[in-house]
Image (cartoon, rainbow, N blue to C red):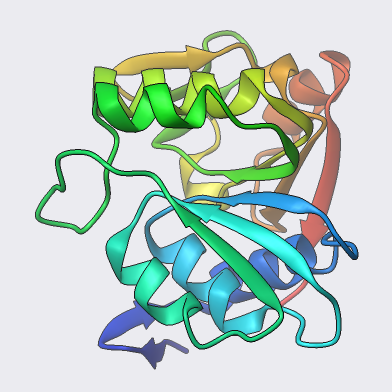
Length: 189
């Protein structure tokens, strides 16, 4: 069953993955929240009983976050894409000056052999800067993107502390990822 959130189709597996991610946020954390559908879902589920700082690279997400009284919000600036996200060199330079207690990243594909991949070099460079400055690194991916290579490599799979995914993943790919030292967290819908 699909749900709608601000005219965006939300699949139950995405929501289940985002719920697990949100539960990792602690008091006073500095959190990078990925743009795209996972980011919007995460924002809709953020805790209201703790104070923390959120950093985003989406003007639409920043617009939503401005109503969260317990969240200090930073927005990466630069040239905005039609999607509302910002990943150019200006945004990457801004992000490279920050430290994150926890980051939530997504991508176009993940394999144990090639690692995390995405559709553009700008996005990959931006994500590398986030990962370099993050203490805890979570990859949020639905099973449909696991075992798939996208265009540009972002990083090796073992750059992440954990992969949060749904239960429809191919066991052999998950086993190969676990051999790389990645904790696999499976969300139940």
